Amino acid sequence: MPKISPCTRSELVRKLRRLGFEGPYPGGKHDYMKRKNFRLTIPNPHGNQIDSAFVKEILKQANISNEEWLKA
Figure 1 (cartoon, rainbow, N blue to C red):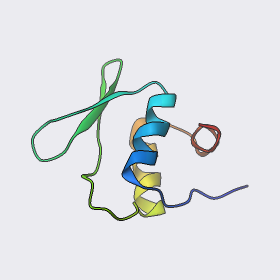
Figure 2 (cartoon, rainbow, N blue to C red; figure 1 turned 180 degrees about the vertical axis):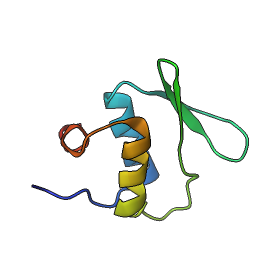
Figure 3 (cartoon, one colour; figure 1 turned 60 degrees about the horizontal axis):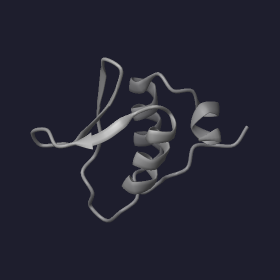
């Protein structure tokens, strides 16, 4: 099974949109994206890649499987 790899914030946003999320919207210290009534906080852009462990944590919070993420 292919592993989740690190990604940039723009890649994260693009894939989340493909998976039904809207945004990002500004909110407090971090932007967020929405899908139905669920609100997902996303990391701020810092020019670096988002570590694969952090991507996995975001997917877990959003209830997105690794397979869904890799297909998006």
